Every structure is written in C-alpha cells, then in structure tokens.
Image (cartoon, rainbow, N blue to C red):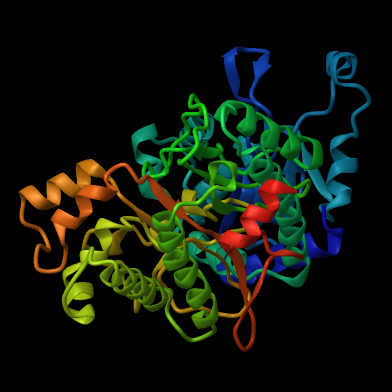
Length: 463
C-alpha cells in the first residue's frame, strides 16, 4: 500500500472529475475454484485498489459527491473468520489506513444506493467483469442483470482511465520492482532452455519465482517452442535442438503492479543463421520503437514504423517485395505480425481493459483502424508523460495464415509465397520491453535490461 494521503488525494481528484452524484466502487469477493471454500488466490479489483487500497474481499466504497461524504462497507470479522484466518483488523481500522472515516456493514450499501436513486441523483459505477458484482449491481439498482452494462457511467469511466493511465513516480517505482522480478524469471527460463528440458518444468520454475518474490504471475505464462501461436499456454513440449523457445511472462509485485517481458531463446543457445537474421529484424523493430516513443507522437505511428522495419527486413531476405509505403497501406506486414505493438501496463497487465480496450487505447481524435493487423493494436493514442507501455514486435510464420493469404491472393504483390515455404516450420520470435513516457522521450521500466541480443542471450544460457 501507499500512504493514506495518496489514496485521499486520488479520491479527491476523482470527485472533482466526476462532479456530482454518488460513485460506487465494488471490491471483489473470493472466487471458488471447484467448490465453495476452495478458492482461487484472491485478487482485488484494480480500480478499488487504486482508490481505496485495501486488499480484502467483500468490501465496497461509496463517494457521495453531492454531500461530500465517503463510506467503506464491509462486515466485521467473526469468530469463525479469526479461527480460520487469524487476527484480522476491524473495518474501522482498515478504513483508517486509507483515510476513510465512515464505515457501515455490507447491508448498508443497499440503503445508501437506494437513497441516492430516490433523490434522482446519478449513481456512477464501472463496468463489472465478475458475475457476482453484476448480480449485486442489478440488485442495488433494481434493474435486470442484462441492463447493468448499459448503465455504466461514461463520466466515471473516463475519469478513472485519465487518472490511472498517467503513472506517478511512486507507481513507476512499483512497476520497476515488478520488472526486477520479471527479469529474474526470464534469466531462469534462459538458463533452463536446454535440449530435453520440459516446457512445463521451465514454466513451473519461473511461476514459482513469481510467487516467492511477489503475488505470482501477472498473466498466465506463455512458454512454448510453437511461438507462432501468439497466446500459447500449452507447456507439453520437450525442448529440442534447433528449435526456439518463446517466453512471454511477467510478475505482479506485492503492491499489484505488473511486468510483461518476452524473449525468444534458441534451445541450448544454438542459433541457426536463419534464426539470427529474423531475431535481428525484430530487435531492430523494438529498439527503433523505443527510440521513437515520446510525448506528442501517436503509438499508432510507432506501430506503423515497426511494420515498416519488419517488411523491409524481410524484403532483404526475399520474403517480401515492392514499395514499403504501398505494402503498409495494403497491410502486408500483418501476415508476419498480426498483433499490435503494445498495450498500457499498470495494475493490470493489459491496463484497465475491463473498462473497455478502445476507451483506454483510443479517443475522439485517434480512432482504431479496421484493417487486419492494425486493428489489433490495443493502444494507439497520442503518448503523454506518465504513460507506461509494452513494446513487443514480433515475426511469426503461421502456416494456416500463410495458406489463407495465398489461396485468397491477399497482398500477393508484396509477399513471396514461394520463398515462404522454407519458413513454414520456423515458429515465431517476439521481443518485449516495458517503457515509461517521460517529458522528452521514454525510459525503460526496469533497473537492468534483460539480455536481448543473440550474443547476450547465448551468454545467459551458457553461464
């Protein structure tokens, strides 16, 4: 947790931005894994963490803007809670930790919301992503559960996005801490990347490290020799000489901030000439993207430039052809990189996507593209100081996508499909770093950069 003054300041700013009405923030409850009492590891709602700071199940918060009051709702620990969970602070003690003076039992939440509705005051709430909170909001508001999503407050949503998107220096320090854990995870993965090792053993080792150093992984680990599958959570493979292992993994630190790095390592550190060449094209794309990122420039343009680097690098190999600008307009590079260059990073690994990916990553001036590849860019808006983003270009050879484009004659003026045949079993390479936008450019969100060149990765594998 931060100091209580941090949370007080955030709530005051939220009050100013929303202006009137009553803001309802629902914390999360325990979620059963396979029966009640056997729960998934508890994870508090990120916006609740941001404004209230309490990592305790079954809490709710109301900011009554019109009456300049705020309330924390929850129930006091019972003797059963104490028997099973140990000594627990009272609700008032928890509220005091974050500067909230008024507390009420959970049952009081309904009356407070009902009073606001009877007074014809606006009740602001965020889009719920858990069924329990969808049902609770339906009951509190007296509407059908199907109507809950249509009543989400645009004013509150916009205010939360504006605030959470700009990271304070204390938040960036937390992200750096998450990055240090992520660094250690990836170094272990590189050292274990040897012939006959199980993907599952490596994934288990780095996820164990994430638990021992923080709150566990920030998302399910992607670790596979089949890197051409973008979100490959299957860990059933046995590493083989000549293959590449793509590892996309990150940590959530003790204050719930995330890291998200990707490296692609040749098994045993033995790269082929073909693998080195493709790796270096991706490396150029990530390095040039980082150099380009600064306030005032759109991330859409950085993504487009990464596409240019990839297209022109592959053109040197004879895999693509033709004019770069025309190829970019046609969307030809998306055959090799169907995903976006990056996304916002913070308390969520895809920060605030529960509030709406397009609302976070775009605005009235910068609209999402509809073209394949470009449309997958999660964050395209104009960069500003305090934004924290991932930079993750890649090159993938996806046989089914290649076959589809060839059969449908898509971008055939720009793709040498005959030359691509020898790359069908290549897999994929992705390299990913995390950056914070500064006043004049950007800086890495980590103390030390993970090995990223071929030589650096080989050294990490061998030492």
